[in-house]
Image 1 (spheres, rainbow, N blue to C red):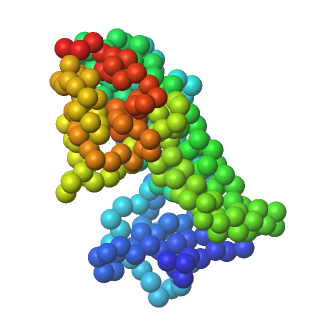
Image 2 (image 1 turned 60 degrees about the horizontal axis):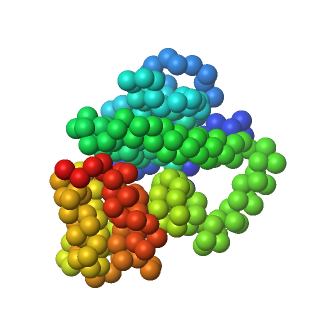
Length: 283
């Protein structure tokens, strides 16, 4: 893909990204136009020839559109009975393709909470955690996409900054931290130790633990039946699973919300209290 990149002295650039189907490409290009007009075929042909020569012309254009680098975020993801998610809550440069994952996680975070409140299992105050948890995540995505956009500047100072960042990313720990940030795998909603972090997927026998979340319920993972017994009064809202090992060192049991984030561990917290806090009064 790097061999298909083109950059001109004025900052204009293009890139051709091949798809699996032979002869099908996605072309991203910046022609310095400051307009919201529809992209015409003539403009695409002009850009293709400008960056790649007169030998090429597209047979068919399946889709053409524009995007910008605007960065905005609403102050609150809730306005009364209205909740905002995805592009309604924030817009940003599509660097790293983070928008889809960001919006899906917002919908997942809000969805199970709405269901619990509508069903009468939880008080409406549970919905306040949606903005508290997701607004900082959106703000951080805007920060890292703004940083990526800044590095597109081709002056000497920004080129130097890009090189230094490149050297830092050759350090495995720094590379891993950046990858986890862009992918959203390092999200932490706050709490002691692993509480508030995403449960890492692991195998239970021949299956993966992630399959236990397909019901839309919470999941209690325990190494002995004593802990599972504590969760049985919530069996209509929490699935209990007996496991040999847990991916959280030193824990006998882990309580996980329907969206895959840990909300309690044993030993460390009182399991029945956490069950009531996140899943309501036993049915």
